[in-house]
Image (tube, rainbow over all chains, first blue to last red; front, side, top):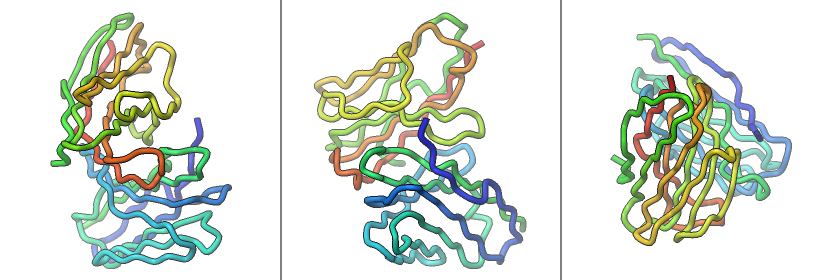
Length: 110
Length: 115
């Protein structure tokens, strides 16, 4: 089925290091959402980006929507062990809805 | 707690069998979505219902079917089960549908193991 690539697939960081995951689409997006899934848990909505070039912050998390609305990034500053999990983007291209990215699994080493 | 409930939490069955997974959306949410997540895999969208009507279809096999009842709960029926159907099945709900901007609230999932 339709998939949206996220890179990297896995990331191990030392606690306190920064982390970034990227979501790339070949088509222009209407909007993009980000979700986090803790190990053994269910996806939890984090944020939605709609406007070109939009940047939103949630404490140590910074979300960005590309100017061309074809890519997005999630950056975590000074990771903590509570940041462990898989981060999914969920882009909406209008044609394909409810397609989730392949996910980036983050492990934080204390 | 998202407010979305799913039963059962775990299900073990044999190949060729049929099972029904149940989902109750958050109070007030009219839209229900079903997703399949295989081991170490991403989320595969199966199907969406809005206020009792099928709204969108994803990669749902013909052996699978779903419906949403007047009280808005939904059931996902999986038949002629195969080993490859073993996965975590999530239900999500949202208040609205169709805009693509709706926030989805996920339930805890049903873990299906087909032996």
